[in-house]
Each structure stands twice: as structure tokens, then as C-alpha cells.
Image (cartoon, rainbow over all chains, first blue to last red; front, side, top):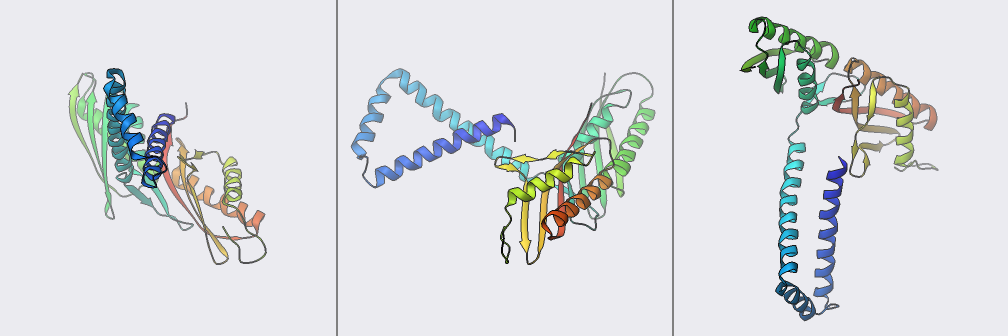
Length: 173
Length: 100
């Protein structure tokens, strides 16, 4: 997790803790309800404070959505199992996609590449969306790209059963 | 982590040993870090220890080979230092890091 994400999580946790503590103290009547209502109403009457409140709660709302999406993204990061007798070995699909993207971009004539993979017990399908440079033959480029990706997946990642590497040329620059 | 006999071993100790083992390997970049430290789980069932960890691997090496070496090194290090058998070392690869 990056530093920024840690800071954002920190803000959410601290805010939640403060709200919980406040609610707890008010419920026990250690802090009278009238005091809280009075303070909040008093603050809200000032335009600047009102603006800060609106910004703060808006920020918290956006933050909660962003964190929810980030956690969901992590949960959806499927894994590809590799065979190993010493324990379970899995590699995240995201890691494989990033790797294919990097390797693919090294092929001469490839400007950009988007990668999606599907993996199940029968094997792996790789879908590439290619932005190619307008030089040389495109079929030759696709052929080379497929060979490079297949070799890397076989030799470096250790995935042998690759069923298909499908390439869609989306752009020629 | 609790041992039935006379001593117990803290998870941090196991992590130190794992890091020591990983330090000897060329193909491993780092243990993936989470919000609360390294993503390493240590479980004990009976006399055996089971370890699960998330790794970042360096690009260029054969991943199955690196993983197998990692599992062997971790097993050996823990067995040698703690005299405990390691049942299995489960590994999740979270990233393949480009080394320029």
C-alpha cells in the first residue's frame, strides 16, 4: 500500500474513531447533548465554518467511495495457480498483466498495449489491444508479439498451457 | 505463535528468519507490505509450521525456479534455527518488478 493510501486510511480511521468516541460519550451523557447541538448550530451559522464542514464531509464521502473501490479492486484481483510440491503458489493476474504489458512494449513497432487475461483449469487466454506504429507489416508485428508473450509466459512465469493469444489492433499511429 | 513445550516463538522472529533466507536469493525483490507490515502469515498446527507470504519478484528470473528456491531456503532456515519442521510455504506473487 502506498504512502498516500495509508494517509487516507489514517484519516478515515481517525475520523471514525472520533465520531465513535463522541457518540459513546454523548450516549453516556458525559457530554450533554445540548452542548454538542449548541456548538454545531453555533458553528454552522458562520459561513466559513459551514464551508469547511461541507468540504470536510464531501471529502470523507469521496474518500469512502475511493477506498471501497480500491478494496473491491484488490478482492477482484484473481490469481493464477502454479504447480509446486512445496506449497501453494499463486500469481496475481494484475502482476501478469503488468508484466505482459512491459514485455510487449519492448517489441519494436508496439506503441502501447492493453492486456486482459482469463485463466481457468483448462488454460489461459490472453487478450491484447494493440496500438502499433505505422511502420513495417502489422501481421509480422502481431506474430512477433504473440511469440514474445508466449515465450515469456512459458519460460519466465512458468505458465505452460496458454490456449490463445488474441490481438486486436486498435490504433495505428 | 505458541509452542506446546517450554517456549514460544513470536511471528516477528519467523519474519526475521524469512527475510534472512530471502536475502540470499537473487530473484526476490521484497515481501509485499500491507497496512500493518509485511504480508506474512505464520500458523502452527501441531509440531509443524505453515507459512504464507506475498512476494514481489524481480523480472528476468524464471518464476517457478525462484519460488522453489525461496520455499527451500525458508524451510531450511527455519528448520535449522528453530528446529521446527515447516509443513508448507505458500507464496502469492503480487508483482513482477522491472529492474533497470
